[in-house]
Amino acid sequence: MSIFGLFNKKKKETLDHGLEKTKQSVFGKLARAVAGKSKVDDDVLDNLEEVLISSDVGVDTTVKIINRIEARVARDKYVSTSELNNILREEIASLLEENNAADVSSWELPADHKPYVVLVVGVNGVGKTTTIGKLAWQFKNAGKKVVLGAADTFRAAAVEQIQIWGDRVGVPVVKQQMGADPASVAFDTLQSAVASKADVVLIDTAGRLHNKVGLMNELKKIKEVMKKVVPTAPDEVLLVLDGSTGQNAFEQAKQFSAVTPITSLAVTKLDGTAKGGVVIGISDQLKVPVKYIGLGEQMEDLQLFNRKEFVDSLFAGQK
Image 1 (cartoon, one colour):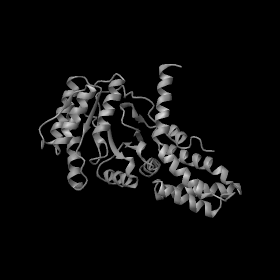
Image 2: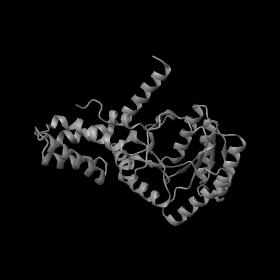
Image 3: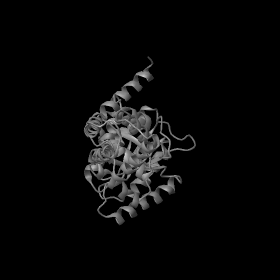
Image 4: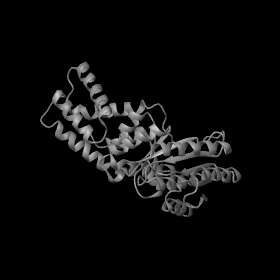
C-alpha cells in the first residue's frame, strides 16, 4: 500500500472514531424507536423525528428528512423497519449533496492569485485559534507559505495563543499591541504576506457577538482595509463552530451570518460529543459548506469535510 493509501486509511479511521459517540447515540435511539415494529408507520416516523431532533439535526432539517421518508413510504406502500437505516442514509446524503458547493479534496489553493486570504471568525472558546494553527500546519505540510495575522487585539491571550501556534508550526505571525486597531493588523499582515510572496494568509478576529453592530462594523472595516493591499481579499470568511454545543452552534452560525457573509464553516470538537448531527442541520439550513471538521487534538485531526465519507462513517456497521 502506498503512503497516500495509508494516510487515507488513517484519516478514515480518525473520522470513524470521531463520530463514534454520535453514531452510538443516534442508532441506539433508533433501535429503541423501531423496537417491536415490522414496518415504517406513523408511530415509527414520530419516533424517528424525536431521534433526529434530540441528535441535534435541528427541527427544520428533521422535518425535511421525515417528509422525504414519508413520501417514499407512500410510494412504496410497504417499507420494513429493517430498510429504515438505508433510507435514512440515502436521504441524509441527498440533503448534504444539495448544498451546492463541492467537497474540497486537497489542500491545494487557487492558482490564479496569491496570497489566498482567509478571514476567520467565531466566538471565544470554539477552538478558533487552534483551528487556525492546525490549518497553518496543514497548508505548510502541503508545501504552502503561510502568514498568520493576530487581529483579535481585544484579548491579550488571543495574541499570545496565535503566537504560540505560529512558533509551533514555524510560520510568521503579524501582530501589534493589545487594543490596536484590528484593521491595522490585517493591513500589516497582507503587506507582509505580499512582500514575502506567501501563498495563504489566515487572520484571526475578535470572538464577540454581544455587540453585533460593533462586530459588523469591525469586520467591514477589516475587509475594506485588506482590499487596499489585495483587491480580492478576503477570498474566504471561515466561521468556526464548536460541534459539542449542538444547537447553540447552529444559533451562532445564524447570528454570524446575519452580521457578515460566511463562505465556509469549520465544525470542531466532534470527537468528544454525541451531537455530530449538527453538521447535517447547519449544512442544510445555512447553505454554507462545511469545509473542515475537527476530530481530535492532533494536527492531522483537522480534516477536509467530505460528505460521502461523513455519511459512510456515521452509518458504518449499520444494516
